[in-house]
Length: 439
View 1 (cartoon, rainbow, N blue to C red):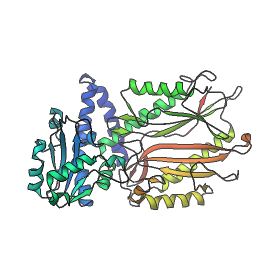
View 2: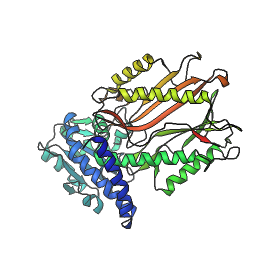
View 3: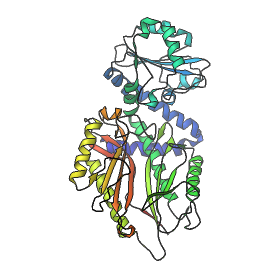
View 4: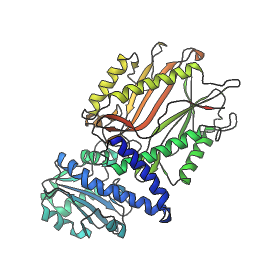
């Protein structure tokens, strides 16, 4: 079975399961899906990434009222003082999984762990295994890998003693690899979230929600937030960004500005489902009186963005670093007749130039994920190699001169979520192929 067919089947299965098990309750159904994902990640991804990073033991610390960012990945439970998730490579085919001081039947029942105990067992547990390296969640560049507080670091150092404190290493790259390499069930769940995201965004940019001359940008943003609440979804970035772009750039963003005919609108947002968060954009044009179609100049600007997106899709491959891919993509964009920008949001004044900048960042457990990133704003993760099953936000900004604006440029940002397979980039839901029209 090909990856494409497998993903499609799993996505349909996920949808079917949602309908089938409502008798159990949605909370239980979601818990079961997360258990399946967790077991697959521990079985298939964890051994690979620990050995690639030379890690014998990985300890994640929770305190009451202060959870590590990876807590949902590992299974949330009650911690009275300190709790530890400990993964140890003992040399066989799998990684030993232990939980010390995390109390709940749900953690025990999820089937992912081998050993359960109290926090006071930590020192004896580590001494028995005598790891050469102990990875801890502190990181210079990735916030989601930096969950270990200074106080918790001190406690570990004192409790384990200098012999083991000398073996502490940063888990930054390990956390990135663990989260960004995907198993089939989480790909299906993320695709489900992506489809929910785009459906809500496309409904928001319709006459169901918008009445020109009456509806404000904030009205649209709050309507989208209500859809998240009604569908038991989280939010990737807080309030959705609903904005108008004009000849001089941003006009207004998610505020009380009233939407008028002739406005070019954009949404930038994401939803949270299970432990996954999306990041995508949609666009709309509010028809003027007497107009029946999108103006030709705006259609041309949008089509320019789609052409650049085709270049990205055709040239992002597994096996290269994100940085090498960034350079390759920029070369291909320039060769296709576009002009790659040096600075974001600063297009050239030349109306003949179609200015472009790309920011294809990681996505998945956060709207801005922590895996390899083909984006200038993630310099450390530009060094990481793109792997099959990495999830990306395929994002770009294309600036095209609009004659009706005296040659000033319309910024068209395109962004949808995709997976990199052995064949290259494959979309996870129907992507943005047109500017929506509001009548």
